[in-house]
Every structure is written in C-alpha cells, then in structure tokens.
Image (tube, rainbow, N blue to C red; front, side):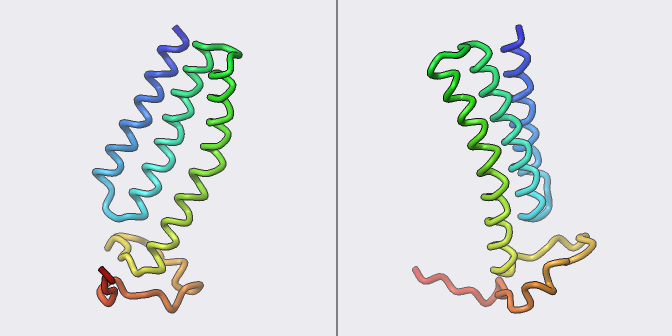
Length: 117
C-alpha cells in the first residue's frame, strides 16, 4: 500500500512539472517548475522501488540515485539558467526585478546570436 502511495505522489509531481513546463511564461520559470517537481517525482518513485524491493542491491541503488538526484538536479538547473541569462534570453514582461544585471552587464543579446551550422 505504501508503494502505491509513493508512486502516485511521484506521478503527481512529474505531471505537475510537465504542466509547469507548458504553462510558465519564460525559460527561467519553466526551469524552476520542472527541476523542483521532477526531482521530487523521481525521489518518490525511487522511494517506492526501495520500499517494494527492500535492502536488495536494486533497493540500495535507488537510495544512491536519490542522493545523486538531490545533488545534481539543482546544480544543473542553475547552470542552464545562468547560461540562458548570459546568452540574453529575455525575462517575462511581468518579471519584477533583474537582479543579475549588476553581475552580468555584458550579456549577449539573443537577437545578435548567429548559429555556426
């Protein structure tokens, strides 16, 4: 029963992340919605596998994968959003502040970027 509850919670967070990807206005809001929700969804699904399998080799690998996800997902989302900001991806019109403009005054304008294909 606990396994099913954890799987449903994981599914809920992953679906929420997908809806956030669809509904949010700019890349930074989308990054926030998807990285938080899918990390929690993955954690609940891996916890369900650990509860179901117990202290087997697969169950312990699920615990290691949870630790790995908690360490890497926020760092990856941060680096991708910082790269998007430095490339000049526009903030949404209703964004309140641009706190990074002081740190990155030389960011590239997205309209001036040419592909090197």
